[in-house]
Image (cartoon, rainbow, N blue to C red):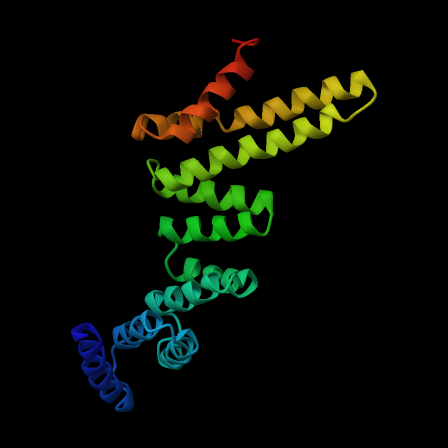
Length: 203
């Protein structure tokens, strides 16, 4: 296909630039992207690491390497790189979102919460972060509710149920904001309904 031909031409050209240590970090990201498209993720990682020897703190290269680790579900290396990227570019809401998602995957609730809150602080109408945070509180509350239902002592169960519902309702402002931004999202509507129902007896 012609795309493959183009890729090969690009690769030859980029390789020449890389061979002469051309001083532009973009060429390493471009090359890595082509290799990832060709399913050569190991080759891509080699190029990115090579590029980062010259441009250690270039955010695009850090993100390129980060995407490699995220794709491998390697959250330990992802987290290291994310922290580095955030130091270099502290106002990048996407980085905090990626950090939140990694912690979410690792079931580290507090760190995920902090990262999502940071992302929303930078960009208050950041739908993905609002959504993930709202759903995270909702799910955490749901898990706590299951535990409450398994308690034999009704007083303990009652206290635990109240805590679980409070946790769920922490998600309400974020879910409402999502609904304001996009009223067509069915999942958000279901979560909202459930939260309004839970909130009913205090309202």
